[in-house]
Amino acid sequence: MAQLNITLNQDEILSLLKENSGDAFKKLLQESLNAVLVAESKEQLKAEPYERTEERTDSRNGSRERTLATRIGTIVLTVPRHRNEPFKSMIFENYSRSEASLIAAMAEMVINGVSTRKVTLVMEQLCGKSISKSSVSDLCKDLDKSVNEFRGRPLEGDYPFLIVDATYFKVRENQRVISKALMIALAINEKGKREIVGFELYNCENKENWCDFLMRLRARGLKGLKMITSDAHEGILNGIRRTFPDVPWQRCQFHFTKNIVDKAPKKYQAGLSMELSAMFHSSSIEDARKKRDAIIKDYADVAAKAVECLDLGFESSMTVFCFQESIRRLVRTSNYIERINKELKRRSNAIGVFPNGGSVLRLMGALLMEQHEKEQLKRRIFFNPEYEEILLQGEKLKQIAREQEQFLVA
Image (spheres, rainbow, N blue to C red):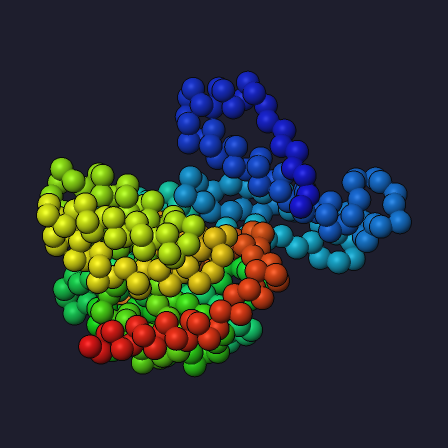
């Protein structure tokens, strides 16, 4: 990755901060992104300005100005030009997609007459001008195409791990405001990279909808699964059993802990939570079972319902012990996807109530695409030796899946 050199005028920035902090942050963002553009140019040319090297691939040919609308106002960027091969930058594609989706969703609210004066003012701050209905329509079409291509893309290769969850957004439908469930699937592929492999909007989280969601993933090529992690929602469990019957379920240990602790008297909750954490972080399944037995013995008289919950759900929360510790910590909970959900919620706060389901998929889809691209730039979370170890557990995992199905049927 190219090194960034950002030059800022200290007196100018301090003066702007004193008079208008918004202008100061615009200036900081503008200088930072201009530095990124310069670094990208150096990386593509493989040479500094006026530097003569054998690796140089092209020469500079001046620059041009281009505006970029952001949440803190419109900034002007100086985009380098190359003489023979066009200069390419990820700034406008990556930054503008989520910005454009937010603008489009807010603009729809204005056009549909469900917004407030505040929304209109935010629109003007974001874009620097009002947006016409035709402009919004064109913008939405471009975003919809990108989002639909992403969420409908073929899934190639094997994905040993899948984590699923849902979060809710308020949507205006038939003159009413209702909550709709956005189901999201995050997978870890055979190369040890996380991917957003699917997302769909449904009216609720019932058995049929979760089954439909998982079947869509399978139809697009999701295969090679060794384990699926989620909370204990009945719809998810039914969908797993019907769609991936040979794949065992890992009950999210974070949610399971909360389920148990909530059933205990308040004065015992802190201590019980610490003991459950120690149990989940055991070195082996045998050690975890010993700690479970000790917890049941200690709390049977004072927290009977909590102990019963632990006993019934223990085995399904321990599927992850088929793998080595470095893998266990990655897939023992659904916390990673929960953090993504929180970010989606935060970014949707500017809208409040979405004008329709399409705008949810548009904005949240653009943000999930952005998250997916970030994951591809991160280092692998496991390598070939660990993956080979995962594959060796295939028969054991299938046996666990059969035992879980028998338990659920009973």
